[in-house]
Image (cartoon, rainbow, N blue to C red; front, side, top):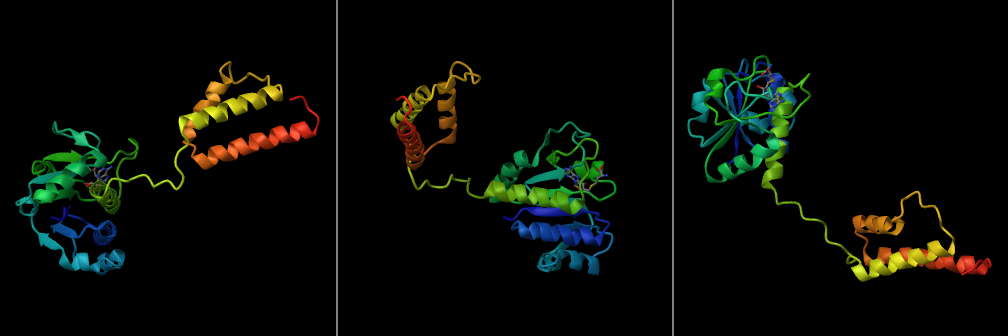
Length: 242
Ligand code: SAH
């Protein structure tokens, strides 16, 4: 079931439109309005841009109790990092998978407060938990539609397939090949009398660690080996010791 986005007593119709747009861009479509100051309104339609269908389908009710009556899970959102009650306050990233799981089995809702005062204590009592978007403690309050955007994005992220790393075109270089690269480098360093040990006494080991972190593939190891071979050839042509 789609997650219900409930705006409680929104004062500015522009924010309602912007919230609808934010929702639609993230694949959400169920917008409920509790006692909006003015709705419908030209400003709401203007800010919705291509999301006027969400505005047209929005359900307007008088109380939050009506909007959440059939909901199994209700999260309120708060611009404050700590709740006035003793609920734990989750981040959007923590809350999103729980909301997605609940929405798969029944009705779940996210509740947003009014621009000026946020959600009232009575509203909060209808919620099962609170979500706070971690913000600067000195300036923690987001615009209503922007808060909707962040939550809608996290729901989308939590419900999508978990990102799989892109398939490699060339397989990773096996350890033995990395080992050959390392001893080849050691050989070249000796040839060029590389004595700068500012990298510490374990220079080669540290270089190996860089190779490890880089997850080199077979072609890349081949390329580095090629560079070392070319350096050695050049040095020999120049009459250096070998
Ligand atoms: N002055 C109000 C702020 C209201 S902002 C207060 O202090 O509560 C309007 C709504 O946007 C909030 O009720 C909440 O639903 C949402 N919102 C704003 N900033 C948020 C944040 N950092 N985390 C979660 N929701 C936020």
